[in-house]
Image 1 (cartoon, one colour):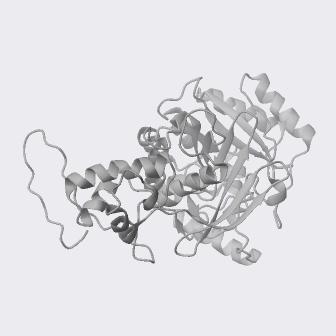
Image 2 (cartoon, rainbow, N blue to C red; image 1 turned 90 degrees about the vertical axis):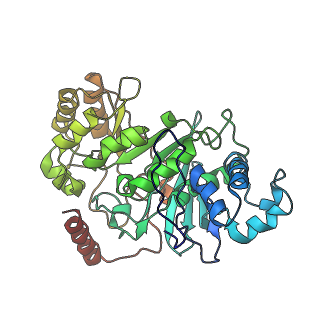
Image 3 (tube, helix red, strand yellow; image 1 turned 135 degrees about the vertical axis):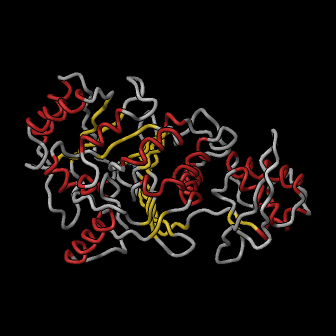
Length: 402
């Protein structure tokens, strides 16, 4: 908190909440980044820069519209803000975008961006176009907290959480690249968002929540919560909170149906087991047959792909009475990966067993493999570590998880 902050005495009765000055972290150039601030914090940032509260309220509303509805970054282009005010804003504030280090386009139209933050950290995002939708895969961390053995991203060390602004910034950058300003509900190429990029979103809960609230705000980006999916490897204590405070669709990185195999593939299972995870799914607010939970299941040869595994998956989903869809994901190889992809015949047999039980089990078509943009492949090119170092980091991550 700034030194000027004072403790206000509580006043009885129905009153408007009094904004409390907060410490806004300046960038390396000394300016405050407005991207990712809530409406209240945007107004507060103006007030703490000595703008009159009444003026700050008006300007915050105008800035919100220009930033999120029209995608404008230059204060001089904000035509309803006085010309004398524009330089004042320019001196104190910035509306950022992530720096693009590299942009790649796959043979199938998938796009991948390697992005760099103001403090020099790299992370990635992917846009996957389809005939009826366009999905942006958004990262939540630089690196990853977890160490899922089949996932290339999981071999990276965790550097830090992404801020709400860096999470929103990925969406803004994609909209820039697709030419989708001003915001409009119809005719968008970017229709869906999945929190399935680098990192475990629930280990960066506050920033993911705050970023997604901006994405869903009807006055700006206006993306429906039903078009946003948050994927977790199973951080059970935060799942109910995610349902209550974010209320987007839920996806679970399941990948195995026995303790032994899931402990190996998704080590967080040693902390929160399958039964505990599935009970949290059953308790997730708002799930029904029209809003099913997606279970992601990577197909690994001779590891988790038997008919017995498929039947156990069906048993578990029915036991917990879960409205579910199972996404079967052919394993996407990466250098040094310890697994192979299941054969097409084995994947088909697995899918048929689940489908015959009345549970949707489509096989996901791999996208962006040629640019390492497919599921489980995201990993910045600058990260090149030895197997011994990867194993050491895996042990350190598990120790940190308790």
